[in-house]
Amino acid sequence: MASRRTPAVRAAEAAGIRFRLLEYDYDPEAEAVGLQAATAMGIEPARVFKTLVCVLDDGEMVSAAIPSDARLSLKALAAAAGAKRAEMADPARAERTTGYVVGGISPFGQRKRLRCFVDASAQGHAEIVVNGGRRGLQIALAPDDLATAMEAVVCPLLAEQAGRVEHATKAEQAGRVEQAGKAE
Image 1 (cartoon, rainbow, N blue to C red):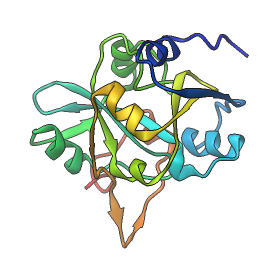
Image 2 (cartoon, rainbow, N blue to C red):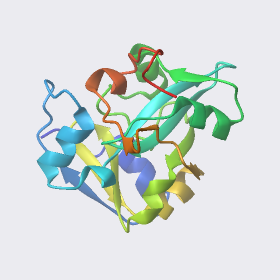
Image 3 (cartoon, rainbow, N blue to C red):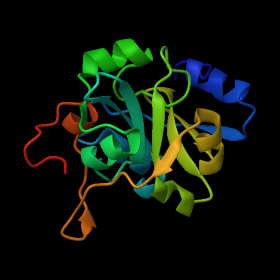
């Protein structure tokens, strides 16, 4: 495996929080990267949080951490950020801004630190898992430590349809979301 000393790991260390590193074999063909990571690590998908990069109507880029088995409500994110609209960022722009490749974007150690929003469901777990700054590397930590270290806004961010949370696809994680029918 590649180095475990990513900018994300260094940022988590600098924040002085307790965490542990988890590694798994990344599958570039997986339909849903976060779900594949959860399965490979044997952790329930609701505890493995994916980091999505979005753009608000004023052009500000933000990150949203949500469970890997859920879909982001762009309306909820926009409201939490004080914006009228939000949309998924172009994958190339997300990579340039964060310094990470899609499938390896972490809330920690981004090239340009983005405002961070974490879904409130994180508070229901003693430990959650976020990307460690490269494909196949994850950081397990207490949700409160993530929120504190990132100065994150913790709020409901999930899109629910018919009383159940919809699963995100690899295309959604990469930011290629069709606006019609894909987000609230």
